[in-house]
Each structure stands twice: as C-alpha cells, then as structure tokens.
Image (cartoon, rainbow, N blue to C red; front, side, top):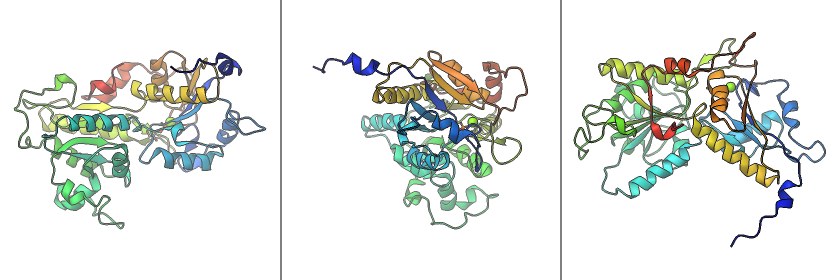
Length: 366
Ligand code: G3P
Ligand code: MG
C-alpha cells in the first residue's frame, strides 16, 4: 500500500499561483528579449536562494525544435533556469499521438507501412522522429528525392544531401499522415506535397471505399473521402516578429491548404487534427505539468494559473476555454496592440478563420 499522505508537508507553504507564459510577444519579440521580461521572471524565484517559488511553464505555439533545446535558449535569453519539462511547444502533445500510433501499428502488423510527411524547417523531421513516429519524411527531402514535384521551388542549398538518411526509401512509401509541425519554409512546395498525398490513389491493400468515411473522426476517408490524416500543430494566423506588423504564421498555411483542397476536389472539406493553443489538449498537458511542479515544490493546490499571452485567439481563448483555475492575461507587447476595449475571442471569429477546416475529434474533444 502507498505510505500515508503527509498532509503537513504539503500545507506548510502558503498557496502560490502558477504561471503559464506565452513566449513570442510576451517575453521575446523576434531576436529581441522584451526589456522587462527577465526582471518579471525573477519575481517567481526566491531572491536569496534562487529557488523557484511558483510553478512556471512556458506555453508557446512556437516549435520546430526539441523542448530541451528550447529550454536551453530560453534560460540563456531570460536569465532564469528552465527545464525541458517546463516547455510546452505547439507539438509537444504529439509524443502521445506517436505512442498511440505505435500501439495501433503493433496491433495491426499486416498493415502496409506508410510515411509521415513533416512540414517545417530543417530539424522538424528529427523532432517528429524523436516523438516516436516511424517512417518520417521531411518535405525538403521529398523534393530532393523527386525535384519535379515542386517546379517553382529553388533547389535546396547547402547542408547534407538529405535531412534524414533514409529519405530515398521512405519516399517510396505512401503518405499516411501529413504533419504540419512548424511553419512551412516553402508554401508552394509543401502545399503541392500535401495535395499529392491527399489526392493519391489508395495504396494496394487499402480497405474498400466506403469503409472509412470522414464522419468517424479519424481523418481517414473512403468513398472519395479523405484517406490521409492531416495534423496542424499551431492555428495562429500571425505572430509578432522583427517586422513592425505581425507576420503570417502556421495557421495561415493550413487555411491556404484547406482552400486549395476544397478548390481541387470540388468543394470537399479537409479534416485537420489541430493542437496547440487554444485547443484543450494543450491546457490538459500544461495543467498536468504545472501540478507536478506544485507537488515538487510542496505547495498546496494552486489558487490560479495565470496564462499570460499576446494573442486573443490562442492565449486568451485557450485559457478562458480551459476554465477552472485558469485565468487569462492579455498583454499589448505582441500580436495584440489594442488601444482600448476588449478583443473578440468568440468562436465565430475562429470558425471564420478556419474556413473549410474541420477538427479531428480526439484532439479537440472539449
Ligand atoms: O504562431 C507563431 C508562434 O511563434 C507563436 O508563439 O509563443 O506566441 O505562442 P507564442
Ligand atoms: Mg505570443
């Protein structure tokens, strides 16, 4: 049996709120660290000992790297210690999906292998493989294997021939999943590759049409439906960077892909599994991580989790939607430069943004 709970040890310290801080537009802006960010963060540490006094998480829709690498650069730029477990990137929940995929594959050993096409800059395919996905193919590698797929793209420059050495073999497999892991570095090439996957004829041995329609929520399709799963990790339309006005972000690419899919297929709706803020999966993971820190700090249950962000449609909508002890705080240093009044975070706006996209149910079950 477990040892008796030592209530005194968890109530010795007074309750302290937890913080889930957005990064871009709150702590950093492009290559710059926002001037007051390091001093604000130091308030969450004991001035004498440097020990943390509050559960603290960096909850970002950024990504394209590992949590460990992001933690190291954050610590360097912000001047406070940051552990990999304190970083939740847009794609961090994918580790759980990769594990579920592996379990499903183990239970269906006769299924023909498929690849995971990863959209994002250099290193994103390695991130996906690190989560446990098999047969990972970087979009840039797909174009290196077959340059004719992207006639308007510049040939890849410098670096090793392939991001992943097994690319020539993996590229022969049918694509089973398109993973928009991070911002596309070549919208035309990546849209073409995704469309090639989505409009490819069924691979040999596939279930007959009609046996796997879109209404089952798994992103698969028969009967002329969608057979290839599409997952987009970040719905943000824009993000604050070095430019004076916010720049188009990963969500804009996915909106464009949905529009192209609808146009090419005569009006079909693309089913997209979505994660990242404002989706519930992110807040469930963040809440669990913060609670683990709370327990390690021997604090009683947190009275509030302050989610500080600069984007009404991801940071504020997500925290408000999570409910419970989550509290949203909107700053003016990034995406939202509002000069008064309250921003709209209603679902109508987000629905309009997503146009023909629909949601893959397991990732947005709220
Ligand atoms: O959407 C782009 C990404 O850079 C946003 O990051 O930290 O503001 O969630 P963050
Ligand atoms: Mg932000």
